[in-house]
Amino acid sequence: MLNFLRRFIYQFKEYFLLVILIVISLSFLASNEKPEVKKIRTFALGSFAAVNNLLNFFTGVFSSDPSINQIKEENARLMLELNRLRKQGVENQNLRNMLSVPDTSKYDLIAADVISKLVNKIQGNIILNKGSDDGIQVGMPVLNSNGLVGIIADVTDNFSVTKTLFNSSLNIAVTVQSINVDGVLSWNGSELIIKNIPTTYEIKVGEKVETSDFSTLLPPNIPIGIISKKESLALGLLHTIYVKPFADIRSVSNVFVLKVVASKQINQLEMNLMK
Amino acid sequence: MIWNFLKPVLIFIPLAALQLVVIPLISIYDVSPNLIIILVVYFTLLNGQIYGTLLGFLLGFIFDLISGGMLGASMLSYTISAFIAGYFYNENKIEINTTSLLFVLIVFLCGTVYSFIYSSIMNVNPDVSLLKLFIDIAILPGLYTAIFGLPIIIFKPKKGIV
View (tube, rainbow over the protein chains, first blue to last red):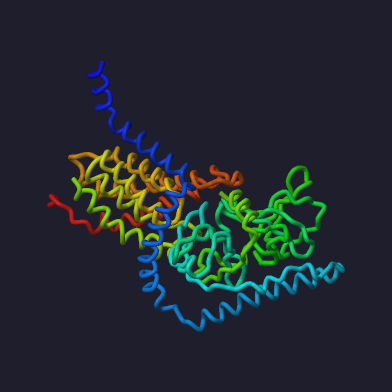
């Protein structure tokens, strides 16, 4: 019996090995959030990001100009300010209470460079050359001079991982600026969509989409994109809205992290929903 | 034996840096070549299925750690891809397998399998139609990767061919 078992295992050793390795991989997948695993990941990511940073220096040597970064930072501030003023203008028209509008321009911006990207249709991740030593925390929004790029998902001392809008695990509460309709923005692998918006709302192509007041994960009024098209679903009762982002996420190289310290408890709850 | 694994790991380190820093610059609509799979397929065709499966697992583990992705996703994808590449291993046809167009075809197949498994694991959004996106997610990156496999069959010196 033992001999037979031994011969059987030897005959199918490739398959046994494959099954064992698959089981180990799956167990790693299941233990991603364990503190010990996180510690190892943080160490490895931080160490190798330094290599990436060096290589990135050589690839970016022809395009780097410090004054451009300053202008881009100023642009990002102005973009936030402009968007806030536009929002206030719409609310003025509706005689809303202007004092309740949160002031997004008061947040500090941390300039960062993209040093590497994990290019994938489903999982858009970028690594930035700023980390917890620069004041970056998990959950902070990342933007460029055009609009929202993503959100900080992991931080080491000197580097941080950002989930971009082109990541299927990132869902963001958004609002259509002109008519204040709220929805959840997600990435379907090819486009950014907002599902299940009632057709009773008159939504027009070209209207601006920004982060919603309901989100405590992100501050309100950060521009995300414009509505590129809409489709009617469920007997014409609901709309699916397609959004074209302002930020060119695929080619982004310089970004700003909005230094927002949100409510820790709510933030943790929402980050759990992102996983 | 250790050298057998050390050699691809040493090649892997600069290759991984290229994959994360330079390759995104030449990606087209999030479709990018996968240099690591070329390495895994090449060494699997040289050393066999068991070796390849173990190498895929090891390189996948390291890549997961350094790329900021989910730990286990690349491990699983590279392991299965290398296992499939191992079916093409033939002790008597190593030269043909690594210097002919068959190598590019194997790279295409394994690149496609890798991309499909990896994207399927990472996808948590029910709105992503895997059937509709099969071409985008798997075949296009596989094709792009296969193109990058061409230099190996072009520049690798051919032995025993008069």
